Structure formats: C-alpha cells, structure tokens
Length: 98
Image (cartoon, rainbow, N blue to C red; front, side, top):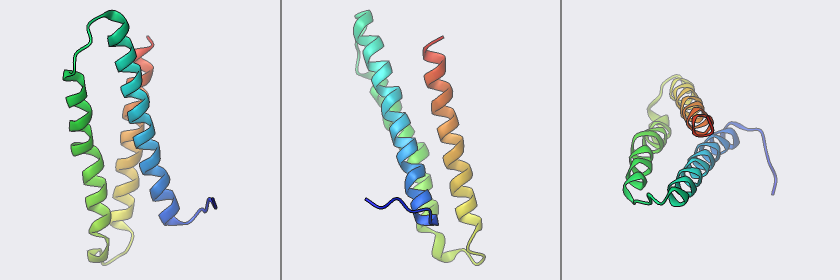
C-alpha cells in the first residue's frame, strides 16, 4: 500500500480519521452502556444522524468540485469541515473519560 501525500490522499485520510473516531466513540459508548446494564439501541440513532449530518455533506462538497471555478474553495470547505468533525469527536471521546 502506497501512502501518498497528494490532495486526493489527504481527502481520503480525512474521511478515515472521521470514521475511525466515530467508530471509537461508538465502541466506548457501547461498552459503557453495556457494563452499566442500561444497554439500549437508541444511542445508535445518534451515530446514524452524525453520518447524515457530517459525512454526507463532506461527500456532497467533493461531488460539487467540478462546478467550482477556482478549484480550491470547495476543497478548503471540505478540510475545514473535516477538521471540525475530527475535533468534535476528539472532544466527545475525551469527555467520556472525565
């Protein structure tokens, strides 16, 4: 596997980071609720909503790339949004351990 440092590679790494942190946050929440004995499936809906509100808009921004006359505005929005989602999940994970 060749890890490159092109723009498409960084876009892929951003999605991987978001999905990885989302899965880590899910596993932590699942284990905590399971050990407390308050296991319910309602918290899963929050993660489905996060996919709808965070992942799909990022994918939509990239699909609109051919319409961008400058070639960098939508990519900048993509990375700013991606970094914001990564920071959100990092904060959520840290707050679960406090």
